[in-house]
Image 1 (tube, chains in turn cyan, blue):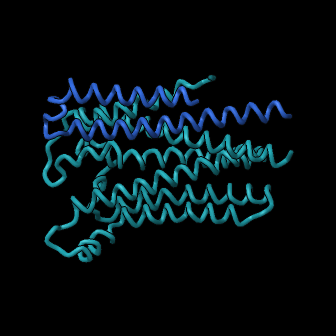
Image 2 (image 1 turned 135 degrees about the vertical axis):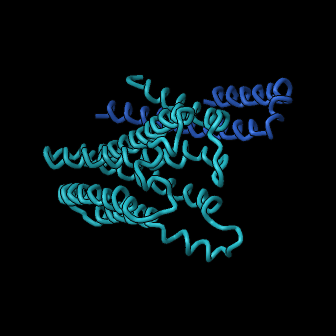
Image 3 (image 1 turned 30 degrees about the vertical axis):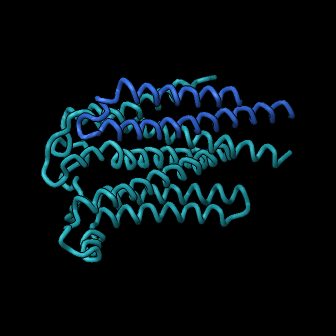
Length: 230
Length: 69
C-alpha cells in the first residue's frame, strides 16, 4: 500500500459531490431550475477530459525527448480515458440540452435541427473525432518505436486543435451553451459561492477517478508486455 | 475471498434494515430526493468497490510476475 491516499481522497470527494450536489441549496433560475445541479457532473466531465488530455500531451512530449516507451504508454492511456470522459460529457450534455434548450412544442427533428448546429457541440465533436483518429492512427502502425513517435507527434497536434475547436471558436460564435462571455462554469454569472463549494471538489474528484482508471490501464499494459517478452 | 463476499452481503443487508426502520420517515421527506441520493451513492460505492478489486488483482499479478523473473 504505497501512496494510495489519493484514491481515498477521490472516493471521499466524489461521495461529497453526489450527496452535496443533490442536497445543498442552489440558485433559482428560470428554464434550467434544479437541473443546474448537472454542473457537478456534466461540466466536470469536460474539465477532467481537458486535464487528462493535458497530462497525455505532456507525456507525449516527454517520450519525444527521451524515447522511453514508458511515457508513450502513459500518454496513450491518459488519452483513452480522456476520450471516455469526453464521450460521457457529450452524452450527459445531450440529455441536459433536450430538457432545457429544446422547445417541447416542436417536433423532435425540429428541435434536433436547432440544437445540432450549436457551435459548441460541433467544436466538441471535432475535438473528440480528432482524438478518435489518434487511436486509429496508433493501432494501424506495427513497429513499436514508429508507432510511439508518430502518435506522440499526432497527440501534440490533436491537443493544439483542442484550443480552436473547444476554447476559441465557440466563444466567437453565438451559442445557446453558457460561457460565450467568459469562462463557462467559472464566471460569477454561471455559478455562485454555494455552488463553488461543491464544484471545485467535484472537478478534483472526477479527475482523480480518471487518473485511477488510467493507472490501472497502464499497469495492465505493463504486465502484458512483461509476459509477452518472456 | 468468499468470507469477504459474505461479509459485504451482510453489511448490505444491515444497511437495508437500518434504512427501512429508522430512516423511513426522513427518506420520504423532501419529494423523496434522498432516495435518489441513496441510489446514486449505492451505485457509486459499487463501482468503487469494483475498481478497488481490479486494483488489487493487478497488484497481485504484478507481484507474481516479479517473482517469476
